[in-house]
Length: 136
View 1 (spheres, rainbow, N blue to C red):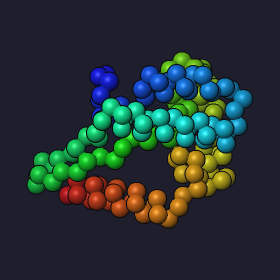
View 2: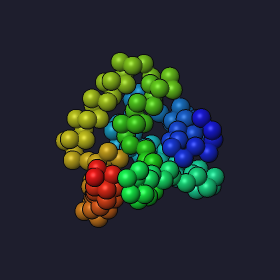
View 3: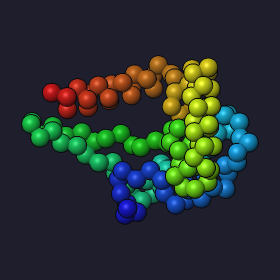
């Protein structure tokens, strides 16, 4: 995958950070903090390299929309542990189940945050606009 690929989420610097900072005994709040660091790093890398998100065009009417910037979710970070060989599949599955339970208990979004009405409405508006149009 080219270094400037607009759909790329996991850059080498991020993998190195995940490899150095993650350990099996991390609490869920610590995992969320690590996710925050990785997400910040992703946005800094994309900005520094001037990587733009892909633009989608409707084949029926020509409407175009830029996709939202990729984000690092807690689940994506957990799955990356297996993808990049930092944890065995069984451990990744157990951690994923633990995250799902923790997320439900604490009513958190995919990034480990309490959903705020402004974030939800902004995300919903974009999703509805893009999906609504491309759903014809």
